Amino acid sequence: MNSWDISPKERALYTFIVMVGAFMAILDTTVVDVIVPKLTGPLATDMYGVQWIITSYMVSAAVGLLICEYLIKKYGAKKVYLSGVLLFALSSMSCGLSNSLETIIVARTIQGIGEALIMVTSHVMVFSYFPPKMKGLAMGIFALGVSFAPALGPTIGGYLTEYYNWRMVFFINVPIGILIFIAGALYLPKERFFEKINFNFLSFFFLSVATIALLIMLSKGQQLGWFNSIEIGVLLYISVVGYALYALSEMHSKNRLIDFSLFKNLDFTNGIFIYFFILGFSMYQFFYLLPIFYEHIKMLPTLDAGIAVFAFALFIGIFSPLAGTLSDKIGPKSTIAIATTIFLFTSFFLLPKLNYYTPMHQAILFTIPFGIGMGMFFAPVTVLILQSAPQNKSELSIVLMDYVRFVGGSFGTALATNNMEYFKALNFDRMTEVQNSEFVRLFLENSQNLLNISSDLAKEIFRNYELFMSYNYGFYNTFMHAAYWGLLGSLFVAMLFIKTKKERA
Image 1 (cartoon, helix red, strand yellow):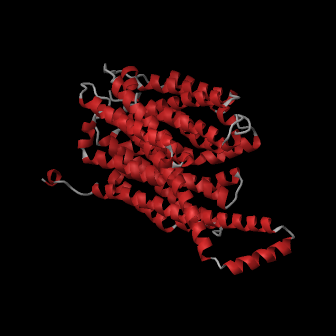
Image 2 (tube, rainbow, N blue to C red):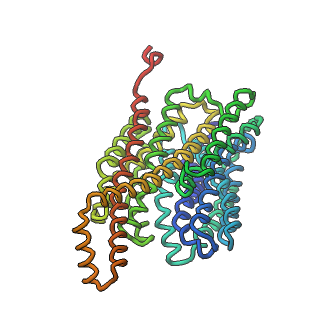
């Protein structure tokens, strides 16, 4: 009997239990992002210190992904999923109880491992519950967790911190996690087939070291001044050496950590690169920048900014399952092409228009097509990748997808941060270059007399106004550069429709 040979009621129940866990885990990433700036006081640290709350989670989750295939094949997806849920719930409670930076970082590190176990196993399990003709719908449902949940984060995080306490962001996971664990233990079906495989600890060690160094470098690059910093140079060196040693270990090992024969299939390779560049390098930049735009340019409170983000998040949720169904009907390749077209149109012609002077209703309307494009993207790409891989390699395929999502998203976030600072400074320099010094002098004198303030204060107010406007106009350049990465990723979408000699024959 196939794993998907179950009744519709059983399929709905299993999918619900698994998806609630996935939704909880990935929602936590952006919910916590909202509260991090508010933790400097309670944890007696600065902004650089609390950034480790995000970095530690991201790093441990990425490393946790690398061991998921081995755990699933040895113990089964159900046991690994339930272990991940329990680990996530208990570490969430530890985060909420923490009174020091050190303890919350340790708890977040454990929480990140729990998230990795949940995400890979839930992906595998949902895909296995649906028959071949409904795989697109399965991934459309799963996309609700991957795409819709992070977009809800700013709204939920803003609400909990404004009306309750920052600790509630963590405590809310505890009862949900316990209920999921009990329901999963009682109702989720047990696997019948397990594999005895040897785990390559040496390759895992080298790849983990390389990944940790790379993600910390990307996370801390802007803070440390990129390659003007010795620390960044050391991290880059460790990462390059780590990846090189990993490659050597794999070349001389009988039991490889990653089976790179998967990449012989061009659809699989193109799918991974589409995921890497369009989702990681491009979509994640917009995803990161839009809440910042609402909070720092439109100057909305955190909760209101979250509600504005919810406008396009809603369309991610609506179009994710629709894209899955469409993928089943017209094929994943055509659905990916439609999603990419919508996203490119939005990223080049709508989102760069956002600035301080854009009315709120117009800003929200401009982001809706982004939500549609993002909602339509995940399901068909996942179906394409999983259908291009042998059935016994589905776990590894999902691990690779989630790994490039983490690494690509980290690159995207680093690029967005770096570009924003660069273009803010560039626009500020251009403003000062074109200014008429005599006109500025008269303006400052009039402002000083009108407001009855000192000359220094008038200059400082004017300087802050220039900084704000340079930040405002810097979003245009940053959005455009994010769109260029999407255009690069679209080349791999085009390659899906180019037939090889073997296919033509």
